[in-house]
Image (cartoon, rainbow, N blue to C red; front, side, top):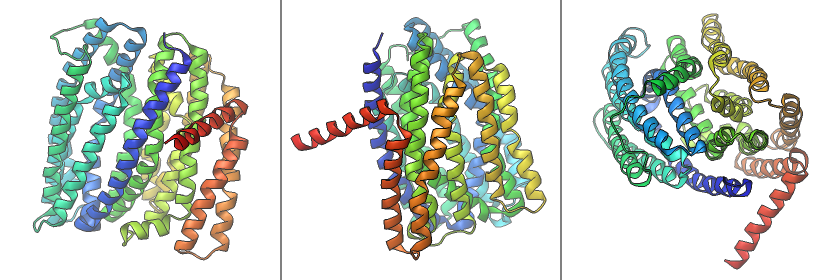
Amino acid sequence: MPTSGTNTRRIAKNVGFLYMRMLVMMVISFITTRVMLRALGVDNYGINNVVGGLVSMFSMLSASLSGAVSRFFTFGLGKGDMKHLRVVFSTSINIHIVLAVIVLVAIETVGVWFLNHRMVIAPDRLGAANWVLQCSTIVFAINLLSVPYRAAIIAHERMSAFAYLTIFDATAKLLIVCAIYFYGGDKLKLLAVLNIIPTLIAQVIYWGYCKRNFVECRYVCVYDKKLFGEIFSFAGWSFIGNTAGLMKNEGVNVVINTFTGAAVNAARGIAMQVNGVVMQFISNFTMALNPQIIKDYAAGQLERMHKLMFQGTKLSYYIFMILSIPVIFEIETFLHVWLGEVPAHTVLFTRLVLVLSLAEIVSHTLITAQTATGKIKVYQMVVGGILLLNLPVSYLLLRWGWFPEVTVIVAIIISQLCLVARLWFLRRMIDFPVRKFVVKVYCNVLVVTLLSLIVPTVCYLLMPAGLVRFFVLCSLSVFSSAVVIYFVGCNREERVLIGKAIRSVIAKFRRG
């Protein structure tokens, strides 16, 4: 069995690969969004965002099965049962083929009807919107079939391969956006068609890599009734939570469209883009951490699992916080430099979405631990039910005339209710030390956040807006946050580890 030190080194190595991926993708993503917004214009950008989101809503049918496959695959690796892994892989391929057919039928019926009869889109752009829907459906189906292969790569913790493949995808999308910028015809239609190409190439690469490197990733015609039942049972209850999550994001996006139109969808889309780039810092870390949490549970190492959850929650929160605080304060300057023309509502949407992500980060390792147990029936009914409140509450507030950003405020409040429910379930299922978590993690990150806001607040209030304040505030905010995290946010053991890591980097720098 791997030692704790071996696991830590593996996590650190994987995080390194994923951060390399993130830095490249961050640059590409910002350039892509700027060029796309200028090429398409605000209305077309909003149409692309909301119609793509309509297709994503159907992923509630697939996300639950995808999560089930990832869980069973990683759990099997933790147990070391390779024969069972091959059955899991082949079964997951069968499931996703059937699911792809179901999703295609659903989108071609319900999706097409909803787009043409219920969404607020200018009549002269409805034809282009249908192109986006059809091409997004093809992309979705291809991505669906690649799920078992991506699950195998992540479960085996081959993050270097995952990093290279996602960098390829992002680079291809940038080239596509540059192509449509110089195109004289309908740019939205061309964008929709070209997006299919990199998705198809990536699927072929996933297939070839997994077949060459993982013996269990060779399809065999098999039908394991018990495994089918276990996966579908797990997926069936996961469906509630995945549906709730999609309704919170894409469902609310469609509701916003029905009350305000595509321009506000564009503003929300840009806010989600900024949040997504900053969130990459966290997803990279948790992607490397999550397989270890599941494997520790499979091996019965609950104490090590709890320790990983505590440290993982704090570290992921602090990474996001140290980056998001200066963005929250200086988002107006950042957006003007990045986009030039900033759609209305974008600034407040971005600030609130970043706060929402901070509120949700505390739950990330808790969700992974809950998934690892496989006992999700009542959990999904309760937590998923709470999450589903996002859609009706947002709908009512918008119908009563509230500003569209209120939908994010609703999501922030509901996220904290879900956190309470998750802690209650984990205390019963894995003897999770809830009181210790609240004191040493939740209260800790709250205190650190409040202290970290002092310096940027002073800069924001005392200095005139402009590039000088932008650079001063960002620099001082990062420095002061790092100091607060080190002395207030970290315990003695964590400070020792940070010190060793810094000395190791300095030593390598001197030798190099």
